[in-house]
Length: 71
Image (tube, rainbow, N blue to C red; front, side):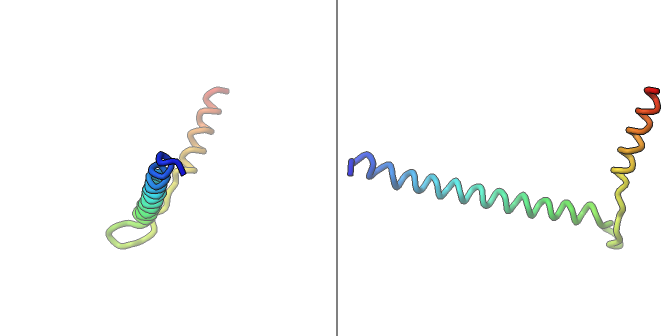
């Protein structure tokens, strides 16, 4: 083998392993964060009861009001 290839191949392997590790850790942290955010958004802090969300209803009501305002 060429001496340049003998030097470049291990370096490329190390860089590839570092990139895979970085992405694996990043995605696992994002997943944990999204699960924490989901838990916090669904439950109240005081008593642990379920907190309902009316966002989709609010969006539909706004769209309906806009549509009616145009007519």
